Amino acid sequence: MRLLLLLVVAAACGGSSKPPPTAPLPGDATPPAKPPAAAQAEPKPAAPQAEPAPPRATGPIEIKIPAVQTAVKIVSDGKGKKQPLRYTAKPGAKQAVEVAMDFAGKQDTDESVVPTIVLSGEAETKAVDKDGGAEYTLTVTSTDARAVANSSVPIEQFKSVLGSLAGLTIGGKRGANGAGDVTLRIEHPPEHGADALELIRFTFPTFPVLPTQAVGVGAKWQATTTAKLADKLDVTQVTDYELVAHQGSTWTIKGTTKISGKDQEVENAKISSISGTGTSETTIADGALYPTHKASFETQFKAADNDKSSQFTLRLAGAFTPK
Picture (cartoon, rainbow, N blue to C red):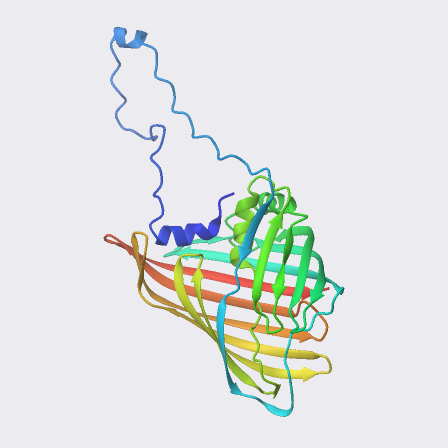
């Protein structure tokens, strides 16, 4: 399995071109002339040997998703009683959760889509510090793949790769405002395990970063994040959040995101016209490590390499569902 996110970004940023064929192409109109007898007696050259596959990792694989730098600006503190808005996990608490992730990439009219990645497991809050920061681990106990229209990967092949990721742990420390590093770790990686973890890293959902001051229903704030898309493109995401409901122990937040970026050069490509949009909805429950969360984003950009120019689109979607 090839990491499909690289299909778009690597192609845009000067990725390697298709290798030349190792055998004659069919359909030649004129057959080759018959060689002389002496030449026929000579041994035929050996067929070109395929390059050996890279060695398979035998030890643990660990991939870190660093916390993004986010600046939060309150626009309105809302109406009614004002209360702190926090992620409030409890020490020792356990929570069953499902994570679903989608990815699609498009270059001009050629599109690549992967089936929905589904990870299910149990999260445990190991500790909570005095500021509300939670140290946690989500242990994946089962994996699945859901069919998606126009998928570029056979779903059974995808399930086979994901099925061997049981035992993957997703952990870190998350601040009470939602910011924090995430680490993916698997002790005994399967074949293509590193590729699968990279795709999960790229599509793993992130939660809203919350304001520090107390707010009421109708509160609005703006979060500005500067990040590298697929570790290559410098982009800025500006998300306008609103606290749309507070019922009992739950708080519901909706967000609308605009994505932009300056013209830039990445490897041999000139990237321009970076733009995009996104939406999210998050319901935080008091005492729960993970909220109910869903989000989707679409980013477009142009890439020019020498005299060739292409339009690229990346679509990401993710959801957390406590069980």
